[in-house]
Amino acid sequence: MCPQMPITAPDFAPALGLPNPIQYFPEPSPRLPASESEKEAYEKGVKDGKCDAENRKNPYSEDSEQAKAYEHGYLDGQKIRFSE
Image (tube, rainbow, N blue to C red; front, side):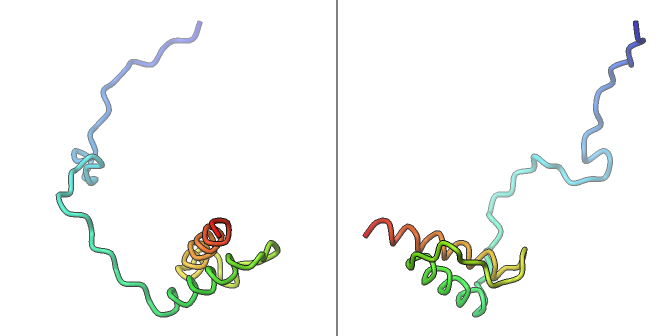
């Protein structure tokens, strides 16, 4: 039989100098306005989503804000296409 390790209580994040993960923030952080390039990427995504572009590829670099905007636009464009 293996010896068991004694059970110890975990240290709280603030005691370790870390931010409290359960801290309540009364106001949500303000959203930054989208840049023009993000708006253009979103509109391109909507246009591609409305068309039946099954083999479409995101034209923006992966993990960029424009890529995220394009994906959101593409999904919204598909919703529009399927609702019509």
